[in-house]
Length: 208
Image (tube, rainbow, N blue to C red; front, side, top):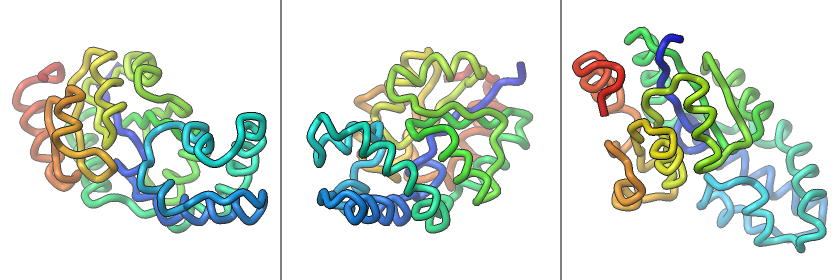
């Protein structure tokens, strides 16, 4: 298997906040349960159920998940944009002869809608995974480095035994990402091609 670079999706490859904000507002309109959409999008990363537990009683969580996911394609896909440097980062991976794999806590079919809409091709996609739960997918897809914006992404990389590359485009600070085990921390993906050239081309595919 050709080695791969793994990427988280929300706030790593795409800025999904505008659309997710609209999806939460639609959820409030549909259910009558107030969700502070601005607060919710400020802490993207954990699974949907974790966020909904802040707003819905336990017995209503699964219905809320189903409703939100039904609303998501209409409200959340079109407003999302690539993060700074994301398109170039994916191109750099392929220029290095490596594969692109997206491993995300978002449901796989919704993640695919985002990638297709933005023309961001992935050679592999695994969804509905978080923290340690991502590690199996990273190993199965031959991921040698994992890029993410959340401390849980660094946990995933550490659990899979690969270097984690943190980007501070999400809710976690550079210090938080380093404390969680990041081998490298970037301000955004614009500097990723140079880093990849250093660690993949310059030092071999298993360099950490």
